[in-house]
Amino acid sequence: MTEALQYAAGVLLFAVVIALSIALHEIGHLVPAKKFGVKVTQYMVGFGPTLWSRRRGETEYGVKWLPFGGYIRMIGMFPPRPGEDPTHLRESSTGAFQSMAEDARRMSAEEIGPRDVDRVFYKLSVPKKVIVMLGGPVMNLLIGTVLLGALVVFIGNPNESVTTTTVSVVNKCIAPAGTTRTECIPSDPVAPAYEAGLKPGDQVVSFNGAKVTSWDQVRDTIRKSAGEPIPLVVRRDGTDVSLTVTPVLNKVPVVSGNEVVTNPDGTPKTEQVGFVGLSPVQKMAPGSIADVPGVVGDAVVRTAGVVVRLPQRMVDVGQAAFGSAQRDPNGPIGVVGVGRLTGEVASMDALNTQQRVASMLGLLGGLNIALFVFNLIPLLPLDGGHVAGALWEGARRTIAKVRHKADPGPVDVAKLLPVAYGMAIVLIGMSALLLYADIVRPVTLRG
Image (cartoon, rainbow, N blue to C red; front, side, top):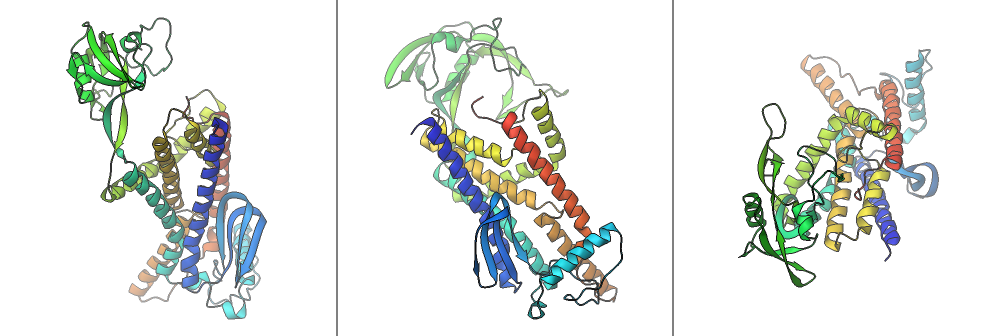
């Protein structure tokens, strides 16, 4: 299969998985809503004009042209004013925001027939409302757990890795300590490993006359042998090749585990040791089902951290898209960007089949975790906004009961429509910015 076909296959796989994720997200809302007796008139994947639909019972199931989300339409999302007949709302002369709320109530009332007055969403108990609205995000969490679980159990735990004796990267030059550039310049000295003829994929068999059993053995010998020629044997394409490398004294960061040690002022701590300029291949360690909760929890925490810092992250995206700043590979990425990454993973010759599958499971699992976390933001029109409204309704009723007051009734969600519309505009703006950034300044695996 050519690289172009592999790329297209990766993008197609991404499109299928994202469509399934959206469809299952909406099923997460649909099933409990129907179970609790709410009348659901539509189940749609996508937005815009309807591409295909079919009615089964009282619900129309369909697919729309723009596959950037989905929805289910439940009757009675907006309650009437206290004491008002939900099927016959009275006219009211109000301001702009009140008019918006009245229009929403009126449109909601038009869907409620005489036999449907007890099948409206706003009459559900608080726990049932929470279950219906959390059903979608929880479905994304389950999808993400399955995908990341498959990665952990069948390939390896992405949070744990084993250092092999195979060479991954051979630096062409020695860049000054603390520099962030990746390209060599004429004044940089040639790295000893590159000068000795080492290549990515070489497996170090012996080093300084001793059989190699771990990369720590190679690293420790290099660090204490600056200026001393070291004989080594590498296995390359099934053949043993003898080489000689001479480490040079170089200033490198001090590393503890996988973390760079810092000085009290926050700068990286460095030390002078022998250096040749090569790195080993890191392989994921085999995992078990018991490791899955930890991996999923770590993904949720990391994603939540991105969401909390989202305003600043979006500023960074804007600076990269419209200026000369570099795009942060760990920052927000849009649907187009993730699709591009999936295509790159599928078409990279440097990755074997297992590595490609692992990368795709990580990308698609992480995407569903992101959908789970993002939808929990307690602002309308996101699911978390409806959950927050239901919890506030429960709190009001509890307070009223304790104070021996009348039941205040359901929360008037219609009054929050200006917030919902404002949030929708923000989401559309963010999506447009990410789309533009993913096109003009994409995050890429190819460098």
